[in-house]
Image 1 (spheres, rainbow, N blue to C red):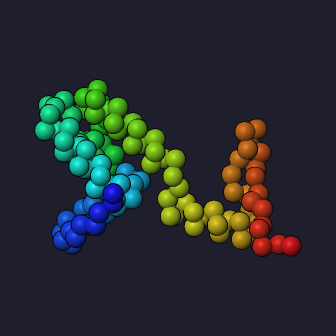
Image 2: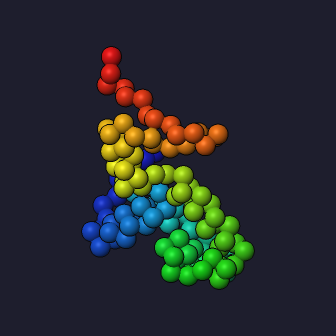
Length: 118
């Protein structure tokens, strides 16, 4: 059963930041941290702060342990699969201007369909 919990603003600020970095909802980030916290209590092989630092570009992935690199790769792949707000704005503008919005498998320019036309 889902339950509500009130958290202070100083707790929610880093939760929102990490959720954005890792492409998670706020609830998903909190759940993730709970799972990570449990895992850290039982294992010395994983350092989530290092994975986050690598995702933010503050350390090289070559500095991660094998376990950390696996987690980093999963998070990186998920993040790269989601367009940023800037990318969505860029392609929406191109669509309005009637310009191409990507390439097909053959390398040909794709034009988005205008769903407002009848």
